[in-house]
Length: 514
Image 1 (cartoon, rainbow, N blue to C red):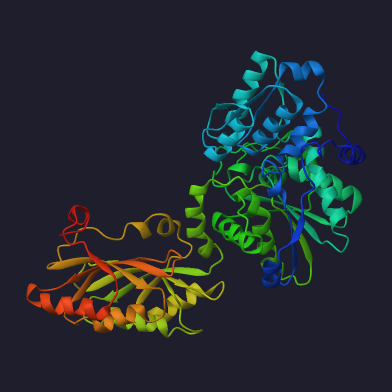
Image 2: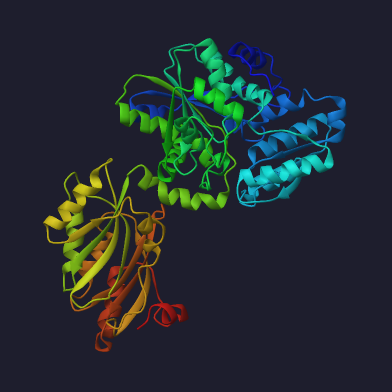
């Protein structure tokens, strides 16, 4: 049975850790824009700028640098969702030893390619870290390799603890709390071990995803809890079972545990980008998301917080999802299902109401509609907001003016699927013409369209989503009687917006035409 190390033991191990053969002392940068918004000073520990874009090489190298020549000759193995894998691969290359890396099949391709580029032998197995760990343990036994644990090892924990040592050296003023992402617990254990030995008045706050909170549940239960499943958005912290040693240290030393959700993390990724022009991975943004939540819950002002940006190994394709959810996560966008009368002029009246909402006009970020009923139209609408908590008030305002509204801002079905599914065939869409327009992204563009349109031309389909460009791409279906052909051409010429008619498009005929 392994001897339990004391706080003094860990302090000594951190002070003597060998990490700087491969790691750099990362910057501690002020997040100026975020600090102004939160009325508290926020510092960003830039572990995203390490050679492998993650803190993980600290612990991996510290462990491997202390192996015997015989152990290095046989080689090492690890299980990792990606960042520890890169740390082991780089350390193995530096130390001249073989590295076998077992990774879950869900690991982003970016991390797999990075490990291979560093000379690691990649084996893909299982859906989570825990699945990969079991397979790595079996390979380790069969091939006589040395296992380099990603978190549950005193030398690995000590290597990660050097981050706290740097933070306290770099920041000489008051520091109220350090926020640390938790997967298996190696980082938070090392950070807490050092801070509580040197500056015990500083809070250490551990942060987990609300769908991968093994450490929080374990601390609450008093024993390690093995989760049956974990969310994979923050793949770097998707751990079903925390380590024995990390659980012991976190339970004793961490002041508080918090959970954050996917939308909050997406918003935090954007916050980091605004201040640094760098993009961190979801795990790297957990600490920033937690600071925002902590400030909102405790109404603090004038305090100083440090967030460890623990990684930046982000799959480029995932940015699409992050951008989609960041505005909702910050509640800078609200989503609604609005019912309006299926009668002439009601669409225009609704748009005018949007422009006259209390607090000033809102930009329309999304508008999806397909005719489906003779009496009522159901519209999916996205609007910009000026702050949190506005969506319920906007919905009430719509209802008060005769447009029944349902607030969808926190509805996962709406955000993930329904917004992309509004459409389909409609028996009511006779004499329909379908056109793709390019509208300038400026106030009044839609109202110009509506005011120039003949009242007798009914809108049967409308699809728009703001993509952050200086123009908007809009798909519109209009019921235009054949006798109005010349008047319709005159309308398009007067409008002056670039367009393409898609009435004969085979995709339209398959999925939308009645």
